[in-house]
Image (cartoon, rainbow, N blue to C red; front, side):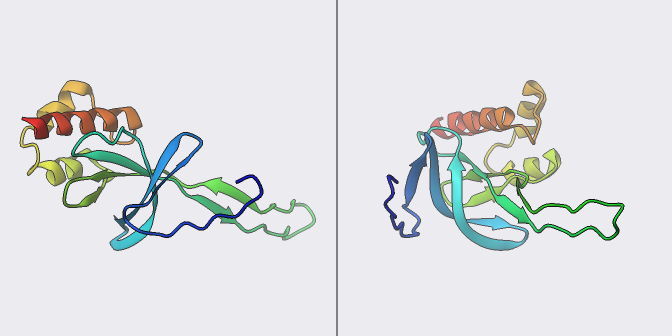
Length: 143
């Protein structure tokens, strides 16, 4: 920032703001392992349940042309697919690829979750649908 280098200690309570986006440091499940890293908070931090996104920029090495008829492929940075997570009071849940799997994960929290999904035409890969889900879960937790 302004030509100065700042050090940020990695702990659970750490939260930073970059370009009006809030990032927190968490342990989260990914591909059967527990990973540590910064996740972007999507909804306001006002409820029991929060939605987070894992945004990663990956690097792909360049490739030289195999023959003179082909062109070299330059090295490039590209965004990986965004993964979403729900922070509960006790755990961090990775949003699965299929809606049925998500229904199974949330059955203890909201037994009538299947009817909610049908009411809003839920799309598991859309941030707007996931925000509606978080609002629903937070409304249930206030009852």
